[in-house]
Image 1 (cartoon, rainbow, N blue to C red):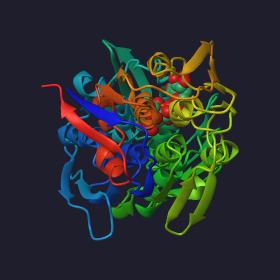
Image 2: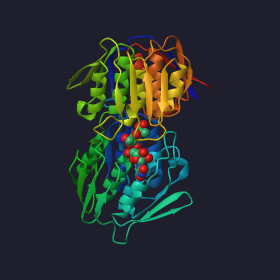
Image 3: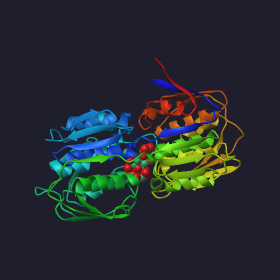
Image 4: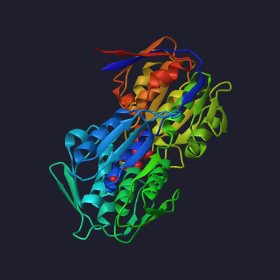
Length: 427
Ligand code: EPZ
């Protein structure tokens, strides 16, 4: 396993190219299952999860052809084609490593009339149920069976039929599965209390480019007029708002100034307002967003919630930044039940953070001290890297495979703006 070694205390300045969004890529790739024509995705990030999803789709019969990045673009171009579906089973050994695999459920059901997907099980940050996904598919006429750790969904003989899906709670993944199942259903589907994350809009725009008829984008009510078939398309993955927010925190925690090339302001409203409240100077233009520290970090009181509120995927990164604030901050995690595993590791670096139920009290300290630390999940890993960038001395972050799931070329991007960071193999 690899580890990342950081010698902290350097002020980061310069430009960081923002890659295509992991959480958009992972819902755009399964769209290829919905047609026998080629779907070309551009600006696809080089991430472990994207590669894992490609392998899963290959097993289902999707060919995936990759080109390198084109001039002026950071991401790869991948053309996916499901001429025929050769399997409708997503096996446990893949799903357990990447729970986003559950996103093949809706499109397989729509295209092939059935799907058998291993229950994803929990992960480090929570038990991650899929009941909302299943209720959505049942509202379109699917029969659902649970057996031996797998969920099996079967469409009626005539295919899925449109219906009303009322989500009792906001779910990004369940909204995505609902959309991908409804686009080929007979009749109209209305999704109420739909997630409004920008990745949902990206998915709806890609499906519409393929011939779907989805309206209500960017709202919590989506209407889908079912069509008989979808055709191929070329679509560019949106920039990663969480990667951009993570590097914005790097600017703040090191007292630097970073230009996040390609970041889009409208995809990160609560992140930017949180940074401004913490004292950042934000300048946005057509090419991206510039985030500059301007003196000390101010304490905040923040709760995570569905978009457009403050995203749970930025909680750990903000916590690292606020561990050096001039005062006490309060962070409350309302989305996942166990998303504070970065706290003990940050405290080992000299932070003063106390978890009280769903909240964490972060008392700002004068400085952090480098230490060997253990990554536990994707965003927790990034919070440890951020702390290491600011800490005195050397920090070694172990189990960086967590980071490789969601941050493309992390060391390269940080080295380019002045960080003393390198990757070493544990042998
Ligand atoms: C997506 O996960 C993201 N992953 C997560 O990003 C993100 O944290 C999350 O949305 C919230 O924004 C991808 O897009 C691949 P949810 P998802 O369904 O779809 C509960 C990262 O770091 N729930 O919106 O799984 C669930 O337990 C990852 O990039 C049910 O109870 O999230 C959670 O408490 C981590 N039943 C809440 O809803 C269900 O059927 C929100 O989950 C589904 C979810």
